[in-house]
Image (tube, rainbow, N blue to C red):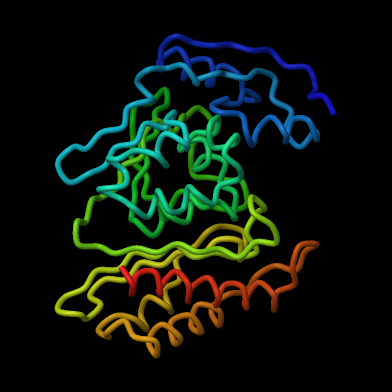
Length: 283
C-alpha cells in the first residue's frame, strides 16, 4: 500500500522543526520512520506534513555527563546497541536493543522515535522505565523534562504536547546495578507476547533496589511494583526469583487479542521475568 498524500519538510535547526510542528495540528515528526511510515501505508496515520528531524546534529549526541548517560533522540538504535559507552554505563539498553525487530530496522530506527511512538510492546520503553530514565522535550514554550514512567499514557499516546519534540534521553548511571532482559516471541523479530526489563542493586548480597518493567501486557509498558516489592530485602535466589515472577504474572491484566489470550500473556510474563532475573543472578 502507499501512504495518503503529504507534504515534507526537512528543517536545518531544532527551532525550525518546532515551529513547523506547531504551525499545523496534523503535522508529524519523522525520525527513523520505521513505525510511522507503515502506519501511514495502512492509513492508521494521515499527517498533513512530515517534519524530518533525522539530520539535526544536536539530536545525535551520545555522551556521559557526570553520572548520567545522555542519548540524543536521533541516535540510531543500532548505534546505541553497539556503543562501548552504552555497554559500560547502561548494559540493559544494549541487551534490550538486540530484541528490537531486525538489524535493518535498528539501523534506521531511533531511540527517541521508539519512545515517542509508545508501543506497549516496545523494548526501549520498558527499559527506560526500569532505568528511571527521563526524557527532555522541546516545544514552542521551551524545554521540559518528563520521567519515563510518566511519558506513556495509552497505546501510542504520550504526555508530549502536540508542538513538542522528544530531543534527549537521560539515563542515571548506577555503576553497581545488575540487569537482565528477556521477552517471549513466536519468532525472532516479532513483537513480544510479553517481556521484562530488570535492574537491581545489592548490598552484601541483599536486594536494596529493584526496578522491573513489563512490556506486551497492557495498553502501556509499566513497572511491576508487586514483583519489585517481593525482591526487596531478600537475596536473589531461585526461590525469590520464582516468587517475583509469580507476583509479576499475578499483577498483570493483559488484553485478549489475535496474538495471545490473557492466560498466555501472563504465562509469558512469568517466564520472561524469571529469565531476566536469572540473568541478573548470574551476572
